[in-house]
Image (tube, rainbow over all chains, first blue to last red; front, side, top):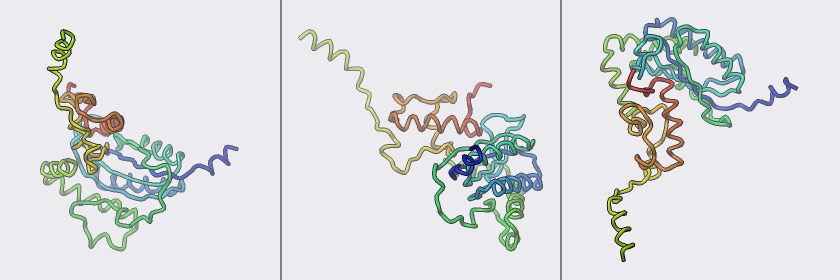
Length: 165
Length: 84
């Protein structure tokens, strides 16, 4: 019975935003993104979009941090996948906050464009990205963004705020 | 006559122009918790949600707005309060 119910779980569209500690290294950010992708595929879901929103000011301190590295992910999956993903976020000490939101009850049959499946860094290293696997691109694309921000942190945050206003 | 005067007096100060719901009149304006730039117009300086009767947002959109502001608070796009 439970097994039958499990199979009948409809696929829905979800999005999750997670915030990493601002001082995470590129490897750690890469590791977390890979793990998210792994969990989604392992539980029979589809990763549809993953974006690095960069380091932004937090409206209030979380875990003694005033800023955080935002990552935005959308995927298709069932409720069990959401629970499993959130369980994984809780286990990761680098993730200081996450929030899942259901965006559609029925998963759209749209094709997933491959563009959406890597971090959108401001100065994306186009030549390095070609020929890499999804997981590698997830992590690699995060690094230039981080370096760029540490050099020019304030102006980048202003840009980020403008993007949202 | 007297009754009429009373009514006129009562209604005089209520000549506040009522603006329409910004989300109903402008299709380009959407409510999204990931967009703190729009949401910040509907919260007070202390971070409280402005009531619909003040901001002119219709009931339907005020409900959506409330959810959006609460979600934005959780991911630290908006403050819960400015006094901490």
